[in-house]
Length: 78
Image (cartoon, rainbow, N blue to C red; front, side, top):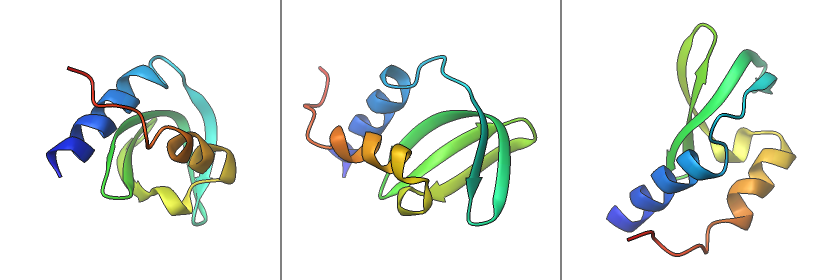
């Protein structure tokens, strides 16, 4: 489990560092000015214009799910 948390934190800080998604819809909820935070246990934290939300990666639009899936096998940084 600790490895998954480290990978999630590392992914969040390297893959999308500084990237702001202008608008993201998840399960009918629209989030604006989204930055991705830590990801683990199949969920990701979204920092957005009105606060913070945690959503299941499986509920993200396909393009974002693919980004997480493509990087699941990356080694844990040391």
